[in-house]
Length: 469
Image 1 (tube, rainbow, N blue to C red):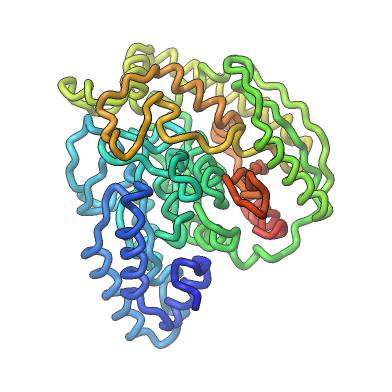
Image 2: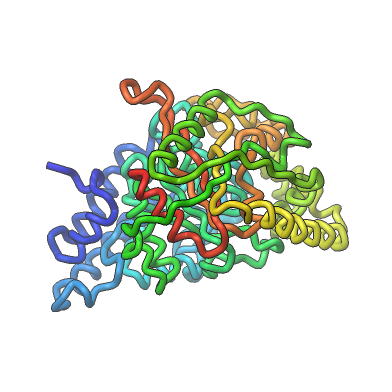
């Protein structure tokens, strides 16, 4: 008999709406999974079991009063969790930082409100890097988030805890937020479908501390159908799930390895990355699409401008001077630099990024979609970015002494095709098309990234579904 955590999110949703499975049973099942596996995976920072079961009982009462499933909210009784950058009323938001006072949030964030209104049940808060700054989910307040496919490896970041939870069956699916790859990087590392919607489609994820408007929420899911279901909540009225099974048109897809980081941080993709790209090309060609090489020219001033915009928020964060020593080395370094920059320097960087967006969109516009690897390297070992071994006996990482610039360089070499998509405001999807070791001996997941024009979220989901994901 298939267990609840083995079901696609869509199938579980249908069982809950029709009363075949109660919300209490679903919440209890996933809470038991979390209790069993989280000590190894570090996916959750906070679990709110009693609150979740209370919410589930209320959902079951609503179901008993409802005459028809269609009267129930879209995600009636579905277990969820949120990154610990997102406020859930009455629950501490740590932002992954030891430098902050950890107080319960007074109210739900807009993102949480959307899912609460859709009937979802919140199980807790998932592991994140400090302030969501990095491509790995390790911090000084809780054990690192580990990859369910190889616990010695990272689950990515900054939505790493959520991705690990979905991949391990601790959640049916989860919302992440993506400001420079933070949905797509952990999705690729954990073998999931990860969708970053285009700018302004999901207004609930917007932040005042994001002057370049980089961050947008998106789904982490095991299938394109599950991702489409979540998109119907994030962007109501677009009917992504209903339109998913329509065949996409025959597309012209540009294939590229070019990256705006290459001039500053030259990198060579690992063979596993190229193998994933090759697998993606074969799948897309077999589906009838036309692929060709696309040479993209990026302005070499991009890395400095992006870093200036990306770190502006941490520079403005309210942190007591007496607690700044508790920040991780990378956070402390980039906060100091952000505070030393003038407002004119930030404005100059933002103006450059707008020109970069215009130039890049003009080049991408020669193709229907752009294709590239999701990551340039296999999922990295836990502690690899910070230069710290994170064995079970080595946490907490209070003695991190890693080089901030070396850490940042490693991240940019690991995920060199992510951040420019946020700068351009475009939708993008990662699809887990390849596993190291082959199908006979599954190793680590490796994926591709497809980038589309504005308002192509539905098309990207259709292509993923067409490829069997």
